[in-house]
Figure 1 (cartoon, helix red, strand yellow):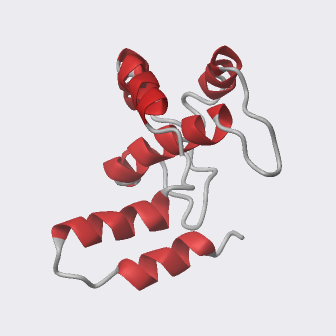
Figure 2: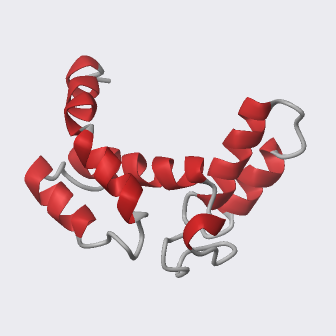
Length: 115
């Protein structure tokens, strides 16, 4: 399981496309944590590409508020409480605040995309 970020980064890496290179950064770094406790490289703070820091927040939000075959959805207030406990540990505090400031947009997307 812990090798999938490196594998994704290798698959996407080396492209001259800025978009594909950003996708490679996200794939490789989306499990890094703000405090350095993540993987695969143990990056800390601003060493983590900003796109990966953003995706990390919205990916966890999406996973928590939607049902999966292995778990029911959490109510949004509980999901946000769980995420807020990880600010400064898993998540960039400034980007998490930006996420909260734009939470209504996340809700609108959830309402619009039901698949």
